Amino acid sequence: DTNTTTTSTSRHLTRATMAAVAQQYYEEAAQNEQMGEDDGMYVNYQPLDNLQDQGVAVNDIQKLTDAGFHTIESVAHATVRKLSEVRGLSEAKVLKIKEIVKGMVQLEFQTAADALEARKNLVTLTTGSTELDKLLEGGIET
Image (tube, rainbow, N blue to C red; front, side, top):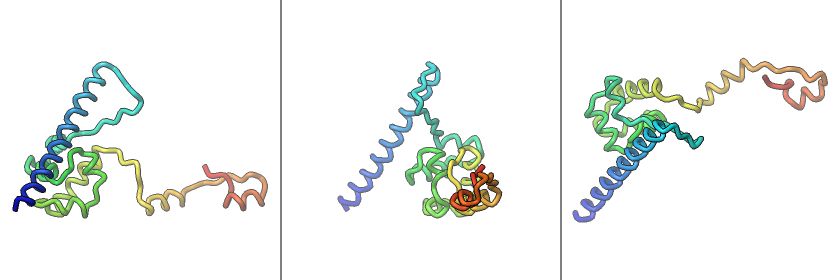
């Protein structure tokens, strides 16, 4: 049982440490924003508490935090399957939360199906050379 307590304590300390680091980052980012500093690598992570403003219950936010999710971005990039593993969150709640965070975070990736659909609408310009167009598989993409 001592081993279980140690593991549980370590996990708790790790989560507490991650939350402290995230809080420090938010404070530094806010301070830099007020001072007008920009190092070119500025990323604005949103704390999970912002989900309250979108109607997500405080206890659901706490469940996500306990499971290791500390930012809205971490929830947005997690799979539905991974979020469904969070104890106490039903699949319906997970889908609702995913829908909410999708509107709060600009996701920079797309599924293969979306990429294929976008390529169907791709227009190519001819180079004037049929042999070069063959090499380029139709011409120059726009």
